[in-house]
Amino acid sequence: TLSPSSAASDVYKRQALGFVVYKFQAKEITGALKSWRFKRSMAFAQLTQLIVPYLFLMKAHGGSLIEVFQNVSARLENANDRALVVRLMRDMQNQPNSDQPFVSFAKAFTDDPNAVVFMTAINRSAQAKGNNDVIEDLAERAQHQLLEKVYQVAQVKESRMVILPTYVTIIGMLINLIMVMSAMMNQMSSAMG
Image (cartoon, helix red, strand yellow):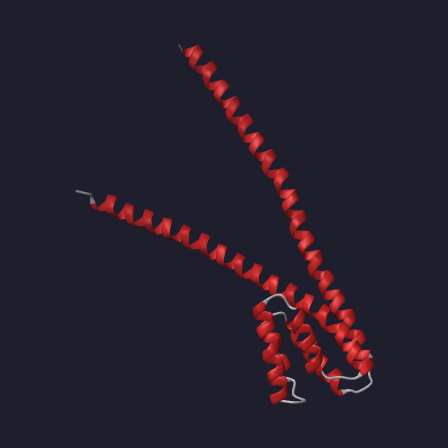
C-alpha cells in the first residue's frame, strides 16, 4: 500500500504533468491561430491585387461592382474564398448602396481591420462616378499591404536561419562538455583505481 505522502506526491506529479501538457497544447493552439490569421491576411492582400485592376477597368469602360467581383471570383483558386465572393455579390444585390455587405465580407474573409476599410472604400468609390483618386489610393494601399506581408514572411524565414546555427553551436558545446566530463571521470576513476 502507498503511504499518504507517497499518494500525495503522485497526485502532485500528475498535476504538474497535466499543467505542462496544457501549456504545450495552449502554445501549439496559439501558434496555429497566429499562422491562420497571417495566412488569411495574406490571402486578403492577394485578393486586393486581383480587385484593383478590375476597378480601373470598371471606371474606364463602365460596368458594375458585381461584374468586378464576377471576374475576381473566376480567378480565385480557394473554393471558400469564391463562396465568400458569391455571397458578397448576392448581398450587394439585396442591399444596394449599403456598406454592410462589404463589411460582412471583410470580416468573414479575415480579421485584419484593413480589410473593412478597403472593402467599404471600394463601395464608396463605385458610388462616386468618375473619381479615380480613391481607386489609385486603394491600389497603393493594396500594394503596401502585400509588400508588408511579404516582408513579414522574410523576417520569419530569416529568424529561423539565425536560430539554426545557434542550435548547432549549443549542441556542439554540449557534446564537447560531455566529452570533457567523460574524460575527467575516466581520469578520476583511473587515479582512484
